[in-house]
Each structure stands twice: as structure tokens, then as C-alpha cells.
Image (tube, rainbow, N blue to C red):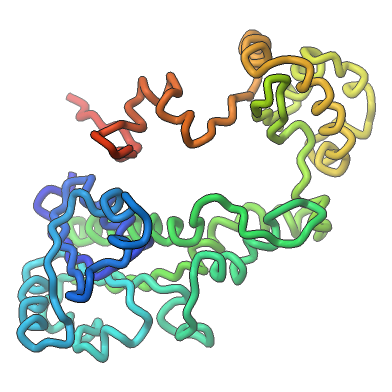
Length: 343
């Protein structure tokens, strides 16, 4: 869908490369500019990380402090549709490639800056990583155990990836707007903190809607958790709606809970989650994962096995959908949206 679109990528590590990888998967030509002293640090940090994020791009090595290489970059920018950079605020200006400088080279360019705290504000010059951005956005405050301290336990880099997606969405919107209105260039200021904060929107609304509950009351969910089975595997159970809660109780022998006013709404099941989940733990431990899946699938309940990473390649649904692929000694996650032209 983006065939003919040319992107200059001045980003490293995760947020920017994840975004430009999406654009490449959609058909854009992505020119990744790497520094001469080893290139993108992702090449040397974790085996396979660089290849996962950059497999469809063309890399060129440029020293952006070298006048000849600066001229090469100017030529690339003049002939491109999108520039995306991930330096700290002020760096591109010092190199002579700030938004005003670039607008003179290519007034039609979509210029996207990704930074931790955004291009202005009291925190703009602070260094940081995903953990710091989640801390400022409030995500960390609802991490870890409900009765415990905040933990770096999200599993994936939420702020980094949220910023990648917001950058991609905004670039696509700007490209569409150019076609639709025949307008000029656009400057996009993408903040990792604000991207994570945007994902917090539903939880923030819930927090104030429930009159500022404690962390324990806020995070606890009754019949909404992962539970250990007899064969020491985990099953996820997510009974939010009343119909699922009622079916679940009838299926596992908890009918008495349907008669108790302590549990007759989703909010009450959050407030009394400890009582519910303690009971479910004892019940789920009595059968194997396969036995429970067979039982629950018969009555249409939102349950699923908890896949460990080494289970993913064996998952029948993921295999059927080609959602994860072995390619030699590498494991590839393709673009997740299936597309087909409608005739």
C-alpha cells in the first residue's frame, strides 16, 4: 500500500525502527542511516534484535558531523516523503537538520521526531528508558502485585512500542492528508511518555470513576487472572460480563456465588477479588490444562492456555494464521494484519 513512498530513518534501538519496520512491511522504501562506529547499537545488544526490526530496510553509513556525509543526507531528504529521527531534542538542529532547515530542502516532507519526553517541557533533555517513561506516565503505579510496590514487570517495552505505533499512525495520517488536500509538509512530535499515557486513558477514567480506589482495589479482578492447573500449567480466565460469570460459576461448581450480593456486578467482583480467586485457585488445581480447556470450550467461556515463549511455535492457531514463522535459525513475527483487495 505504500509502494513508492520513501522513508529516511535516523533512529536506533526500538521505538523508531519498530515504526519504520511497519512502514517497510506496508511497502515503503526505508533507507536506514547508521553511524560509522558500529551502526545501530541493536546490532550488538541482543542476538536477532536488529534483524527483527530492520530486515526490510537498506542501510547506509553516514557520519552526520562530516560535511560530505551531511550533503548525502540532504540529497536523501530532498528525494524522500518521510524523515523519522530519534535523537534527543536539539541534536538535529545542531547538525543542521532541524525542522526549519529540512523544510527548506523539502517543503513537502513529513518530519517525525520520537523522543522520551517530547521536544519541549521541563523534562525534554532528560535521558531515559522504557521504565522511566512508564513511571512518569503512571503505568508503573499499577504494576507488580496489587498489595506490593511498583515493579518493572510489564514483559514488553510498552512506552517504546506505543510511541512506535503512534508515530506510524500519525505518519500514515499525514500521508493521507497530503493526497486528500494537496497540502505541504507536517512536523510530528512523538513523546514516549505521552504515548504510554494515552494507553492509560481507560484506567485513568476507571480510577476517577471509582472514586480513587487503592492500588489493591484498583488492580484486583475476580475471575480475571491466570490460574495454575494440576499439571503445573496456567490457564487464563476472563469473566467480565455477567453471562460469562454466571456460566463459569455453574460450570465449576460455584453456584452459591451467584446468590451472594458481594459478587453480583463486575465492580463488586473487583472489590472482592481475593475471595473469588482463592476459591478458583483450589478448583482449577484439581484438573489438567487440557481437561479444563475441553470443559470450558463446551460452554463458550473466555478462557485460554497461557503460552510460554517456547510454546508459540507449537500453538495450532498461531501456526494456522502464519502469525509466527521459523526462518532458518530465526523466528519471524510477520506483519499482523491480513490484507486482501476487494474486487
